[in-house]
Structures are given as structure tokens and as C-alpha cells.
Length: 183
Image 1 (tube, rainbow, N blue to C red):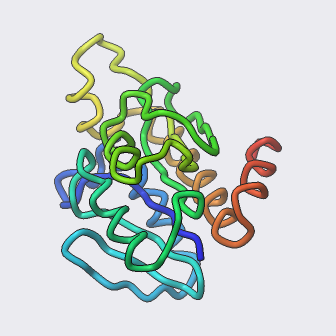
Image 2 (spheres, rainbow, N blue to C red):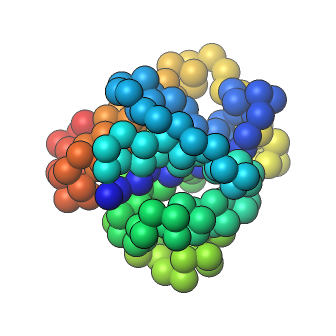
């Protein structure tokens, strides 16, 4: 069993924001099959065979709580997860898939690492860039993308959804191979 965890904040006010890039990817994967969705206090879990999707309802900074609950409920280890998240240190629309690593300043990933007690967690980062005006990063991640950025992020979410599907069907190695081929 494998799971893709998309990070984001629950609620319609946050839906279009850059911080919800992980949720955007889950929406695309959900649209490509017949998933059964079950809601828990900590998150929404969709299941199709041995594949799981998790949309935490704990807000980004407390994502570790939802991930730990999913892992306990389904007996999943960190290596069977793929966390999809936004990354302000990557240019808008760029993807980066890694089998492990630190939080890179992302509080949601830091929460997951702290809760699971390991950095050996595969992650797929979607670049959202930094504010062009030099403004504060929290405001940037909680705003909707504008102009050309919308198209770049839409294409990135489409490519990320493909990689997530490969991960669910064939595992991390195949996802890394597809990523290396430029998706």
C-alpha cells in the first residue's frame, strides 16, 4: 500500500492559494479513477485498491498529525508515502522529486519529519517562487497566483499528478525514473 499526501489548508478561502499546491495535485489524481473517500477529524482519505490519497484537515503547519494518523490506520511506513508540497525556493512551476531530505523551511514538511521521526520520506516539491516585490513570504504563499504564473502552476500540478500516479502504481524508483526523463 502506498499513499500520496497533498499539503494545503482546508477551506474555500485557501483553495486558490499557492500553499495549496499539494491539494491541486490530489484533485487531479482523484479525477482519474473511482476513489472512495472517507473523512476523519484529521483528514480526508481516498482509497482505490491499495492506493491512498490524504488531504490533511489540520492546516499545513500541523500536517504531521494527519500523516501519523494515516500511517497508524493503514500500517504505512514513511517510505510508502509521497508528500506533495509547495516550495518558495524553487522557481514557479518547477518540480523537484527527492527520496529524502530536510524540511527546507516548509513548516508542514517539518511537522511530518518531526512526527514520523525521520527525513527518509519521499517528497515532490512544486515551485511557487518568492514574492517579486520582496514582500513577506507568508503573504505570498497565502495568495492566489496571478498572470503567467497560473499557467506554469497548472502545468506543474498536471506533471506532479502524473508522477503521483506512477508512485501509487509502481513505486518511488519508477517515479524518479519518470522525473529524470522530464515527465
